[in-house]
Length: 109
Figure (cartoon, rainbow, N blue to C red):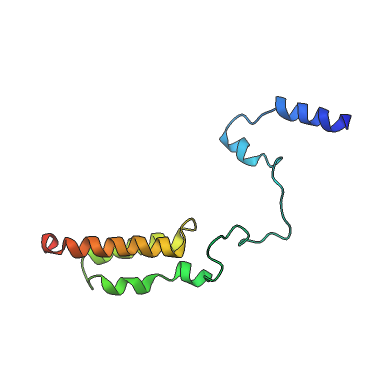
C-alpha cells in the first residue's frame, strides 16, 4: 500500500506540462481488451458502417451540374469522413442544404 501512495504522490507532482503530454497520459484509463471500435457506439446498434460512408445517393436531389452540385458533393464527402456524427445527423445536414438551395433557387439562376 505504501508503494501505491508514493506512486500516486509522484504522479500528482509530475502533472502533464502541455496538451500533448496530457493526451499521452493514460494513467486513469481502463482499456478493454480486445479493443473493439464499436464499443462506444450508442443509439446506432442497427446501423451498418456502410450507411456512414456511402452517402453519394443523396446527390440525386441536387442539380446535375454547376457550383451547387460541386458544393453538395464536397459536403457529402466531408460527412462521409466524419466519424463524430450519426447517420441521422448526416442526413439532417444534407436535407438542410437541399432545402436551402431549393429555397434560394431563384437567386442562384
